[in-house]
Length: 295
Image (cartoon, rainbow, N blue to C red; front, top):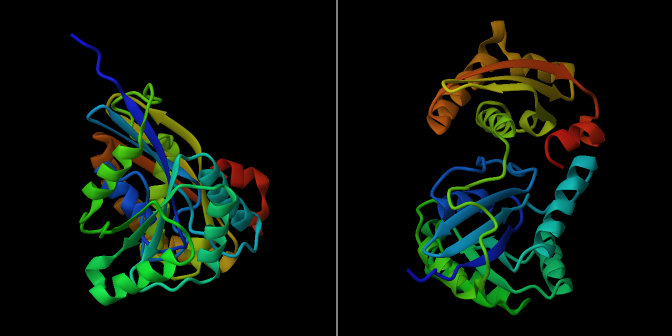
């Protein structure tokens, strides 16, 4: 039997916070590998997702939302965006239907230009916009950069995702596969547990607190039927610690239970999570903690 030629394309997903980058990655892969929430700056570390289909391997890099950096955490996140653009064949610049070209977008376009980057303009959330808004957004951004393609879509409803994959497949180059066919994400299981816990915090806690926490796995053990993880939750203030734990531990128990149910479905086995909350002032500028969370 003749061996089938394989090909690969590396694509970086970039854009400002809250435009749906992680939702798009999950839709492309058909599996949740990156956490999502309605709150800005949900993604912190770059997430690699891999789809192998019909002789083509798509390697996606989901980057944090580009924003004005005010701490070591912010600077590391912005650096992650820059590195993601530099290390890809093509950039998927995600904007929201109805968006204007503001400073964050200008900074990303500058990065694309400096790297002479091939790029698609991805106009997301078309299900919540009028045709006029979509066309206006395309016109505004197309004046600022020569995009190789423009693809309106809805990542949430998976409308237009197949078109994006088709266009990426056309740009893929003959190559060996960099990952095994069944590989989906490079996120270690312990880190994934931390991320799912943080996602539940984003949904259950107030606006400020989830952005002032960091989660690290102090221990991780896995057997055929059980995963055990000891997680430390770092927060910036004593008052935040009390809110995270809740009265008689109720909030932390709720967050842990929601995370455990999702993780058990994801891993296909029992998951036991032990969480301990610590106050760590200015952890956003602690290089050790930033390294533990992948930055």
